[in-house]
Amino acid sequence: MKKRAVIRLLAFLIALTALAMTVPLIMAVCLEEAAMARAFGLAMAAVLLAVLPVLAATRGQPIRFTASDGFLLVFLAWAGACITGAVPYYVSGFIPRIADAVFESVSGFTTTGSTLITDLEMMPRSLIFWRAETHWLGGMGMVVLTVALLPLLGVGGFQLLKAETTGPDKDRITPKITGTAKLLWLMYIVLTFLEVLLLRLAGMDLFDAVIHAFSTIATGGFSSRNESIAYYKSPLVEWITIIFMIIAGFNFSLLYRLCRRKFREAFVNSEARAYVLIIAAAVLVIAVSLTAAGGSAADNIRRGFFYTASVLTTTGFSCAGHSLWPSLAQGVLFLLMFIGGCSGSTAGGIKVIRHVVLFKQMQNELCKIIYPRGVFSVQLNNKVGRKDVVYGVSGFIFLYLFVAAMAALVVASSGLDFYSSFNASLISIGNIGLGLGGLGSPSVFLEFPAYVKWVLSFVMIAGRLELWTAFVFFSRSYWS
Image 1 (cartoon, rainbow, N blue to C red):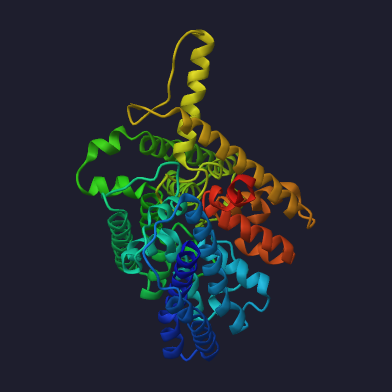
Image 2: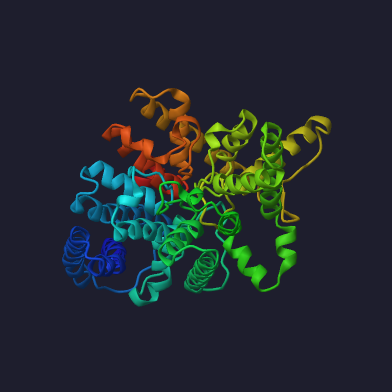
């Protein structure tokens, strides 16, 4: 029964990925992009012909998943969606190697933003739209969309949402998990529409506004321009992007409560306060560093906000030559790569809440040295937190750094210097997209050997799924 349910939901998710190609297919036909129309048409036909019989054959009684079932389904769903999404790149011939096509697709769905395309402005518009659409779908998560639709399939969905959503705590907005998923998607759509509108008013054409709104709200970073946001040379466009990057890196559950005027919950929230403090501190240091090197204070403050938001929320947009910045400013960006956005957001990385937990535990350890008989606990949101949260956070950060180090060694085996290799690893596991030094341009991944791209593709998926969902399969306990 469980196998039937897993196969059915997996087929459903892959079918959703194929159906999402409808809009770029229509665009390709209207814009007379024959190669892309053929690629999208073949991809949709092949996938739907394969999964529709499976959906028909696996109709069964409702069943609820255990945690282990949810982990397996979520990982397979993301892998299946990424492979399905790679088909148009490969069939069209614009990315002629399988490893490259899968890498581009994985980077899109995981909202990493690294790319193998060197000249975006020469690409078909329908393909550029598909890249951005994979960001948008992956940002909130194909699985969360499925949870919203699970009543149609007769399957319980909390284990799926638990395995897919980001952060150590899985917060429900409504008593029913499907209601939570629907509200999250509604907020996501409203924010996307609002940013499209503001970017249009700021001077962007509709196509570019949609592309950048998809990428911003999903904290992905794919652009329709080679120079990214810098192409527009517009402070207004940059400020709009900054605001929505910061919003997208915020906890969506808490954002919903703010919309309902529950301001006290945001004020006492430990992660929200830390998030604001990190942004303020990073902007201050970067602005002072840049101003000391020259330039106007207003421009340097804007750039500080832009790159702080871009790296902290793991979006990866660029607006100026950050690779030429003073070492202090680049050092701040490097440290932000280890933080990430808030839990329950579309951002990647370790997440602010985990750093808050470890910081508070560090304070407790210092107090224990002074007061050996004292009893201290980690307090979150003015409440005493569970002790097992500290253990979970410690284990996660160790695994995060271990995987980052191992991935860096794999990249270094291709001949790249270790700093750049570690940078590439952090970009992938944190779903950041924007690197420092030699990786300032995301298209440098094109030079990597195929085996490096496969490893980094896995690391991107693992990072998007908070590592545990991907690495639980390496545990003997899981299979027993």
